[in-house]
Length: 429
Image (cartoon, rainbow, N blue to C red; front, side, top):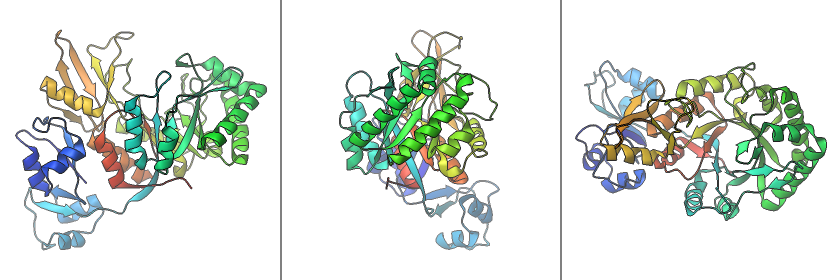
């Protein structure tokens, strides 16, 4: 699979000709709604086996081979060139596909209200072949420990038809927000806990769930050990019922990190007790904060590297956003919230506003600026083929268990094609 970034004057025809692809294949792979109006800086995926590399100033065959994990002799043989010859700048080298590593993939799907929208159903059907787990978000908890299920529609049959497991995501959401007090009640009251675990096991058995996933957020810091003990007891009950147990973890970089989101999440204990964890490695750029990349690669790496000091790599799923934000500038604390948008919507917005897409090499994320009809400047950060490939490379480098997406329903076709190109997706059982 090739990633190609649109340069001025390029067309689908010229790009297809460069890589030996077809215009139709490019349109389909990238789900282009305006194929004749490409945006400068837009990243496309080219659906070919392997990829091409164009020689840059200072390159050598040896250095290029090192970059792609192939010997310079083999690279020369594949491209039918003399291994001792110098390479002209711009020379095209074919790089064969690498052996795929095997990972697990989860995706949350979040219905709103009492019904499931057609958009979410279609997204689940379209992307379930790429999933190990599908996680309807979420089962909420009453203060007596009973469960409030989300609308499920045909999610169970979609998962079953695609050999994906179901993840039973349980949260301390109350009236639309994570409740510290509800969380405290759940993890400190043994009667409530027993009711909850009874309901979870019954629901999992009748609903065909493989994994029980605790996403308890903003728990009181003083209840950290209560949460640890709750998880230990829950793990014993769930294991006896033949169920896996996973947890969601706030993105920490040390055991002593302060803040209401972080302190009750004990990486060491979660790594010891849970079958696997999801690191919520996104929302550095968030709707109520200043404009920046949602999941910049540096901070993401910092969280994972800390997690690796507390648990093995095969227990870590990297959290990944499938969205971006459009901020109105200047940022004012407590002011207007940013609008969420999908990668496809971000590209369409750049096209409509006639602005180029830029790329931050440090954050490994695309962005652009534009002015609205009232003269207000906007800053947009989102995900594209380059940014998601950077996360895939991190997963491979650190040999992580897999990736977990928040959330389905946001169009990002390049992600799914690159996911399949980089990895073999494990299925439960």
